[in-house]
Length: 178
Image (tube, rainbow, N blue to C red):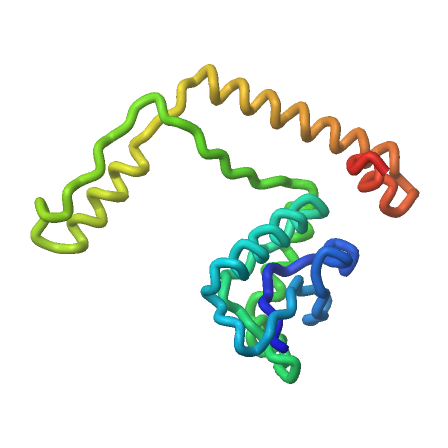
């Protein structure tokens, strides 16, 4: 068996029981086990990893690790991670209560994608493609509405944590309805 590493976490409880926790320094890597002959690019595996990643985000903020970081049962993750551990711990501690969200929204205006045949080099085309995909804007009213909703959700989460102060995991149980 091999393990596909999903992210770096501050606490073991942030990982288990959603995924396997692998200790690396004073942090924990979340991972799922797959058969040695399972291709890392298999669609079913990618969907499974995405699902586990989403469930891990429900528990706590974590540092996502690029897909494709795999360990065999005999591998020590420390050599692959040691250069990053201090930075990861600082990020995890600083941003423990923060949430990152990616929203896909229909843009108010849209630029057409460039035709790659109109360019003499791949670099020119990629710059034009990047400019076209980054040039969309969202209606200000929609942006304000989303920001208000996110602030309200953050306030509810903070209130749940305040209620659970001094009682380990009480805030999580409150948020999950348990």
